[in-house]
View 1 (cartoon, rainbow, N blue to C red):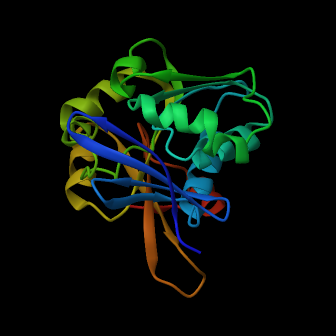
View 2 (view 1 turned 135 degrees about the vertical axis):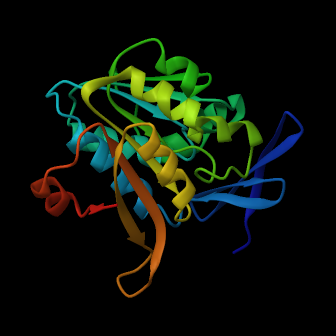
Length: 231
């Protein structure tokens, strides 16, 4: 079955397209596949890790990037109704598509403790103190859809996020690849770095990578419990 084109939008000269096939959605950016709902294991794990690593029983969590909604859905599911979740999404079209198309497959209705806001996650981070900040933006530290997203993963961006975390807060991010340069910048910003490689299938090699940054070294029990590797 062929992909059906549902909508297009242009932002800062970049063309975003939404497709659907047999109930699965895909977003392309300038013709390149950015998100495909057929493969969301890493987003599911990202949301679960954020919920479980937030130390407060009633956490405040900021998510950068809405995408197809799988990270948010996993986070909400594993929070079990606790806490408050703010999602910052830079693309008005992605928010519109979530309301009209992609989100309807994940939520009957958006929970009351979740807010989706149109804006930059770095700016919105300054509005509060967070138990966890989750970056599910673009292609990871080397952006595909918007060059400006690289600011999130820069030394200055990491320092800004660190300043908005609570003392035991964590910064998690999704990446399509290993990025030693990002790890070096995170360490220079004072973070201890762990990672969770995610394979597409049990016998496949690493497909995506989840980085978890904390101010102090992650206890061994957490490494074992969450499948994290110390870097």
